[in-house]
Image (cartoon, rainbow, N blue to C red; front, top):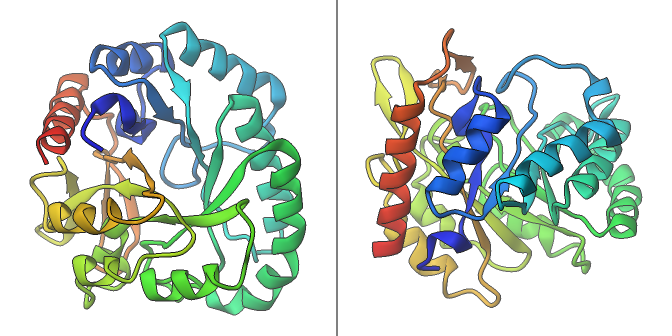
Length: 279
């Protein structure tokens, strides 16, 4: 994993900017894969009508017009919540229309474990029917989840012998979800079922965790990547820099009122991509 055109860039870094500007900027960085994101509380407010085939095709056309491809779609929900089944079904179809090979979501809060288990087989069949992998991610909100860390994630993955369900691990989420855990130590437990990693880093600024270029935060990503690159097969990597977002120590997310300036975003992405190539 030493070429930037093998790395996906999440569009959350550009929250608040037009898609046309975003794809032009990313293409100018020498990247070819992107990961759109539509997540309540993390991006502009929306309702479920946004997940239409027509909108997905429009986004795909804009992405492809810039010479890029959509490798993943980030659409975090709670699968066990009352509307979780239908919500993820919509997002699976949306991901397929985008041309993505995986849809990234949370699993479920611990209180919804049984409902999650009852639904996941149906959702895996839906995903297989359109050729999209469901990639479950450990959360950052501090609330007990079926997947809290690499240990619980790997244990869950061992229950399913299907290529259509996997893990999208995010070391950066541990900084607020389980701050007592060292992300590097936890990442050493990654193994079966790992399909992708969200790469983001952060530092405490006053009473908030703010996200930074990958080489400037609290996590030693060189150690994490040394382990994940050794896995067979190694995961795909998505650079996720939610620069407009911050979290309290308990994990509650906040979006800054104004979008981050485009130059600031580009500088952070370029520094992160250069560091990844050097590592």
